[in-house]
Image (cartoon, rainbow over all chains, first blue to last red; front, side, top):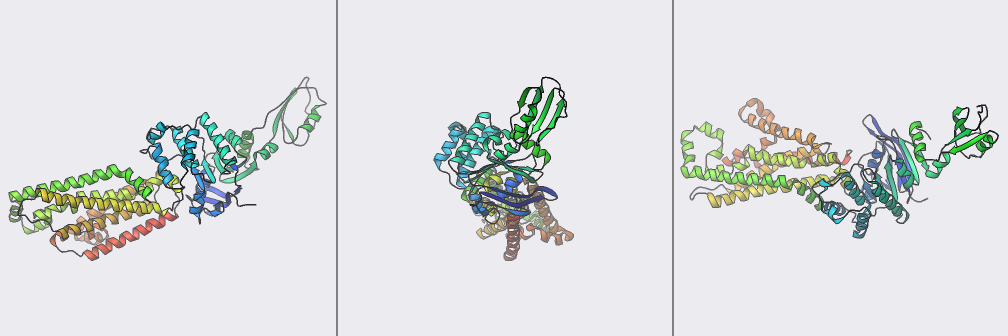
Length: 301
Length: 264
């Protein structure tokens, strides 16, 4: 096993008596696109800001590419491209000046990469000449994404990257993330509460709830473990005495209509139904959203 | 570092130039007034009319052309203007935390302490520029406006007053920096320190005339800025500078220490 791109070990941060995050342990592998999910105030931003050494942990540690985020903060931050959740701007600067200023702070990005990103996010020369005080939220966000990605850092930490972007730009962002992680080998750690985007972009997700990591799963694992909702309509009324196979639970049981949640293969349920007067069967497709919401609510995996 | 200094300087340029212009204009006006006084013989008339204790209370700045030419370094208006501006500059780290800019800047491979060093450089640039501009304004004012035959202020007095004003402003700025280094909002760093500075100034003024306040006045940085005594030629420069310098070093060290270990 190589060095994880991001490693959190028992990471804990209290803000006085308030728990920010507690005992977070997690490895994010190089090249992975990792979704960090949680409701507002769950601890996503606290985790990210601790990795960036903006917050000092109460206990535990974080490391980026093997460099401790506190003791070797300079080296770890050299390897990070970061997009803050709320985009801070210098209102008096033009977009071009803003990017130049951040480039000068290092690491120096190749001009060709910045130009590629500006094209990808449809930021024109005219936009770059305008002062940032005149930018819309979406425009500020686009420039934020560009500044985070332009350095070509091997680890990208993006805090709610698509908030404020229009659907076209969300599409461009998703494509860019795929491209950067697949061809560039960058690791992407993105926090979000927009589940459909995470479903689309991430290979693995972690769910944080009230400061604690309650689940870390690949999307494939989530799909396999997710219950599917099967609706069965009977041509004549049937009783509810028919036993269901293991993993199946009746959610609703009317004489001519059952709703069953089933985890695992459908075969045993179909075998059970084969002896009944089934008129129609509907199977609701898996969504990350349902599973994640269930995990949010249960707080366990 | 230059990038950070340049960025901060550009943000404050408007206010900086306004303060600079105000100081220069005030200095020119003073010399014009002093010239008018000298040409009408008002300094001599004042000396004859007013009893000695009132002249002492008014200070040497109103007793001679040379004294009046230098009161830009001593009078509360320009002195507090310079000091409060430095306090404002020193509150920048808190402003950056408040606006979230610190997230953007310190996500880059930069040492945290650079933000404090940057602010100190900015304070140094500001105070040196103000002193230099005021000094040049005095010199040009004297060249263009001073009537023939009047005694110009001594260069050594001007330089000593510049040194005192620099040290006092720097000391107050250092206190503000130490407060800003642990504040999350600019207002909570700037407001109390600015009010405190004015209070310290008033305490020193009270200490000059009221024995009860005299003991407390040693806590005021302005206690170590004896402007009138400089014009009278009697001041313990080494002692005053040592106190102001030591206080500045202490508060700057405190600022570095706090900023390096705090949550941003």
